[in-house]
Length: 228
Image 1 (cartoon, rainbow, N blue to C red):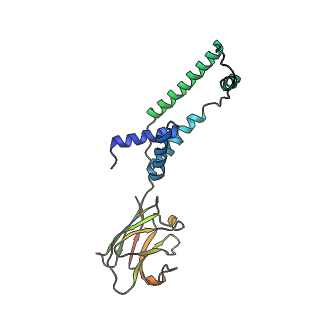
Image 2 (image 1 turned 60 degrees about the vertical axis):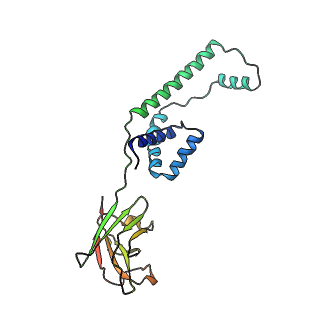
Image 3 (image 1 turned 45 degrees about the horizontal axis):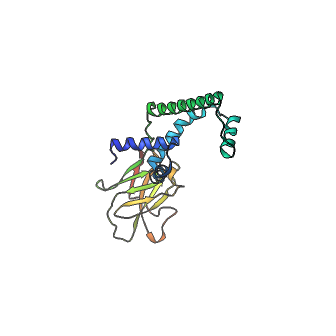
């Protein structure tokens, strides 16, 4: 479990990555964390979204001819003594950069961190004709995985097959279920059908011919889907 201090450090790391303040090993570490931790990646994306209006408000500044003369002087020409006007220009640029950095820092500190929006999970409690027969199912739309509880093992060679029945009333197979329960990956085309108000049903089918286009028998368990 991530404690408050570690969560605060991760938030600061996400903000620094979004601002482009990280370099070298620190930047590589933050990018690896983005790839391995979806929560951290969403936090970086949130900071980028929040900072974009501030950065877009800054007018584009083209380098003046002084900049190019200075580059040429450093590359091949002998250094010349800076004129008072040039010193003033560079100091003004430094002050402007400092002001921008201070504004960004103030923005990071004062802007309240908005919690990452969590996609609602789908849950269902399927019941059979026997009230003691209950099957709990949950679905995480973030990863497309159904978690199915354990159930009694059938003795007639048939296996339980899970179906989703949306508003059109046509059952679609979500796959065969192991009697000990576990995870069932949901086909991306089926995921939008797992929504509030839809029905989950279980029928007993021949596993040798699965998956099936339609159930061959009446459901032994059914339950409505709710979002939490």
